[in-house]
Length: 204
Image (cartoon, rainbow, N blue to C red; front, side, top):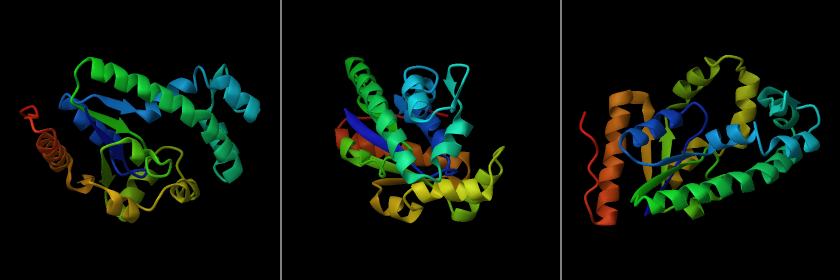
């Protein structure tokens, strides 16, 4: 089974690209989605104990949590120490299930892949990218986003240029959906060569 690590900085179009892999029949494990589930379940108690006041009605309030950790590196490290092992455990379960179903390619969608050393767990890395001006416009169009918050998020992420340098494959999302979809299918064709057997993307 070939493991593709999918990553990209905020606003680059990673979630859309992950959906394109899924549309081609490739199992995709979404680390962000797992975190959302944990924030409504298993992680609520430990996070409230570490950061009192960040939960509301039995769920982690992401805005309150962001205010507690974004500008505080030691606090962010404590949060990551709580969350990352839980996310990794869910990822291992996902891979076991995918292998049992006979999946030949699996995508692990991990926003902080390089920052957490996750590239060592995959066979190849796909970086989703776009020009900085496109990224900035996309992010600042999000509800509740500010230039200051954007800068704080970027400060936690490896620069896009370095991610591109380390990538095995790059998906440039600045040229539209059709172009990005074609790039995804090109990656799957390359994966077919690695596997030595056809991997045929769906028509359309």
